[in-house]
Length: 137
Image 1 (cartoon, rainbow, N blue to C red):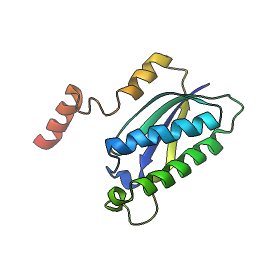
Image 2: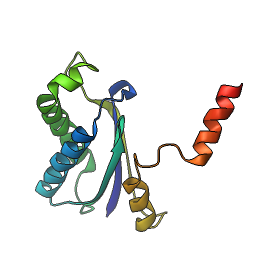
Image 3: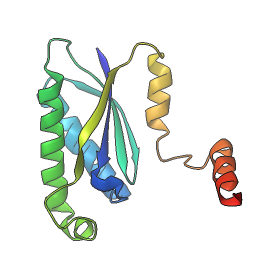
């Protein structure tokens, strides 16, 4: 099965630099391989990351997600301690909640493109217009 998984930083802080997101991708890809899963696509912005991966349907997703969040948080906090100290005083990185869904309603290519584009076109024309309308009020 194909899964779309999203982790958000605690308090939605914009704490994830590009280097941290790159490292998170490497860490999570390795962990998924240990679970015999395959990373298909990875993307994100300063306050969240998206993953698209394939896994056997018999695997317990809650255990996999818990492992991904715990290990990636611990390693990123260790490797980027100085940067993350500006945002967090306690040993945290990810919000307790997460999003996971199987990819089925949308085509795999549609979801793959969505995850791939995370962080690339932050201010689309429709989003810019909505922001300008808010400021005009």
